[in-house]
Image 1 (cartoon, rainbow, N blue to C red):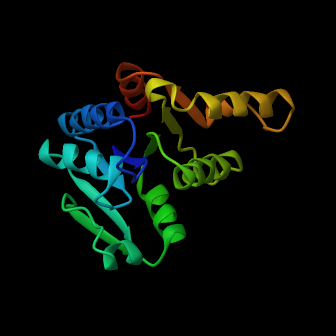
Image 2 (cartoon, rainbow, N blue to C red):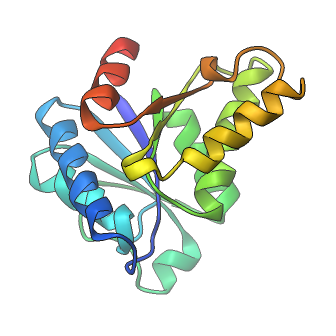
Length: 179
């Protein structure tokens, strides 16, 4: 499978997020899944790329021109797709992948998660997002989704678009169900 991973490009975050990300990247490589990611050499982005690449997996970097011009492109990219901007990067990543995994991330990751879910909800595709809820990182988002659902703001069951994995075993099981 081609797995798009949305995640933080920040360095100064919980160190456990890096070790859990590395574990996931190694699993991806061992199980012959390709990584599609945003192409930067920082934070969890570079961590997942390094783990997949060094494990013998294929890393597809979808890199906005500003990242490339700024010298922030990962050294672990096997296939490079340049893009003009973040919107193009997101669209290409979504179009190329089979499934999306969201590791801890910020505003960009939220944008990407909801773009996948929104386009799924109106029938553009049937791709799912799996929130890898490392150390409860996504608990507030899960609570928000449940609150929106209880108020009738979400059409259908949001779990049909966004699933939650609280550990690596749950994550890998959800991915294997989709393959």
